[in-house]
Image: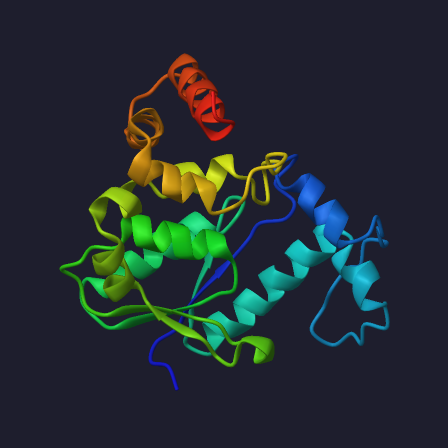
Length: 218
């Protein structure tokens, strides 16, 4: 049983994004017709057709959000992918109260470990997928065990190894970048600099090139 929930939704009709290819892959190329929702209608469309149209998904989450607001929930709509807004909201909440984030993807775990404040109240990431047996991760405890070096640099190896919006590197194991942070001076420096504000595009490209050379043993 949760206290006052804050629900955060992705935005699906905000124009082209880096996740379009991922959404297309998940929908298996199925694109359904646009449906105009209203509270009284019975929707007979197939689930994959409904979800295969971003306008339908956005209309549905907008309607669902309005219903939740009327029932006392705080609802937030991200400008695109919701992960950053979810993490920022949860970290802010954890300043004052014990906070549980309900989510499934690795991006949330990485961002929570990166942004969580060890001085805050307890912060947890919980999966409610039946296949994961309601796994609960204590973010502050894990961040303490991993240490500031790993957590502060974690977005870099996570991004470079490939996830929703970046392609996976050929022949590179997912755990290698984390090992490189501990053992390779150049890779460690690249990761730390990548996560520093104010870097130019040229800086990021140069860092990425050095990191790739390191990962491939150059």
